[in-house]
Amino acid sequence: MTEILVSHEPATGEELWRRAASDVDAEVEIARRAWPEWASKSVAFRTETMRRFANQVKAEGEKLADLIARETGKPLWEARAEVESVANKVDISVKAYAERTSNRRIEGAMGLRNAVRHKPHGTLAVLGPYNFPAHLPNGHIVPALIAGNSVLFKPSEKTPATGAMLVDLFHAAGVPPEVLRLVVGGPETGKALAGHPDLDGLLFTGSARTGLALNRQFANRPDKILALEMGGNNPIVVWDTPDLRTAATIVVQSAFLSAGQRCSNARRLIVRDSMADQLVAEVRDLTNRLIVDHPHADPVPYMGPVIDNEAADGLTESFLILMSNGGQVIRHMTRPVADRPFLTPGIIDVTAMAERPDIELFGPLLQVIRVDSFEAAIAEANNTAFGLSAALIGGTPQLYDQYWANARAGVINWNRPTNGASSAAPFGGVGLSGNHRPSAFYAADYCAYPVASSESDTLRASIGVGLRDDERDAPKLVRKGFL
Image (cartoon, rainbow, N blue to C red):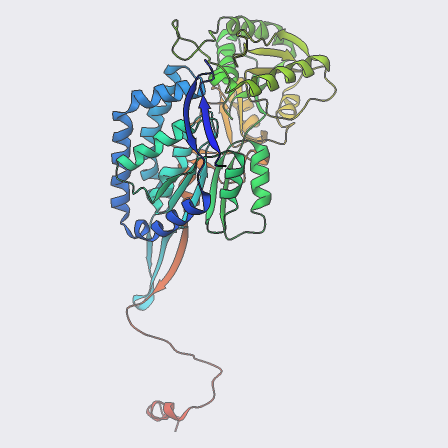
């Protein structure tokens, strides 16, 4: 029986979209056949196609934003910001391709030329997450298409409708349907796609658990590119600032933006003990004012629900586990709407816990840790196997230099939220947060591979030593006076 994938709105539970699961073998075959012709197009042609896609996104922006809001539960204002990022990604990717994978020629002696050019890998799979169902996969798809690859895009099974509309917008802009394929299905479909022998690589954004499974799956295939952008147990350190209200605002933005469903959200607030009570009170008071409601509510909410009831149940259980193992509740996490995945933000002091779980709690849950020295703060920030994002709030330039030099993360901010990353910069982490292939501006690096060439217009070769005499060389030897 064919699997039917159904998407529901988290805020209401209503059915939003349904479609039969894809035949992975058939989809890969189509994309594989289409790749050579797309790769043979000029970069200018592919770039102009992407610019038409950006215009298509702008034209359909409100419709796409509404769909994102309904399918993820995020407020409409945030969904609109995501759509804007989708359109802006094209210019950023064009610039990145030119800068990161530019053609270079180096003139050598006697007309010799040394060249460096780039080739696409071939057919790539893109696995997208549910928290940014358009922006994050788009950050792989656009640079992959510019480079000349064909792409098989499998959106998260929790947000397939957004993925389907994104692909439709690419096709409407002139990307051949055979070059960009939508693959619909659940985890088993994802496994089949990732393991397909005719793929040349996979670009992934999602959880560390899935990323580790993919890393094992690709372990004996060094010929295939694998780019992993995973989650984080991100620290935000607050130190010696008199402006506690602004510091608290940055903490709340870091922890609770997108209902805590960004890989760059702050999970741990590390604060100097002497200022902790005042800061935590400010954080709690501001958090109490956050509106949690459905995407189109009036007044406008700061947060919507998390993605589904399973996620909400897991977060509620995690809060209770922290509380029962020594955590001191600062603000309870609650479920205000029965049978729907709305959560009020939870804040809990885990300083006294003997062992703190090093996991990514993907939702509006902030853990507070008090320390008595800046060295202890850095040690606590690094007390994780993840390494995606980190921030220092307050302190001096000298302290920030110390923090930047010692904090182990791919994104390190000062007096800015942990989730304040620019698409014009690389975005990625170390440890369990990634495999040293940052995305955003650096996505161009793994969408094409460099080819070095040594080139000459004429044949020219000689071996100057170590050869026996050859009669064909006699005239040359006579002329030189050897015979």
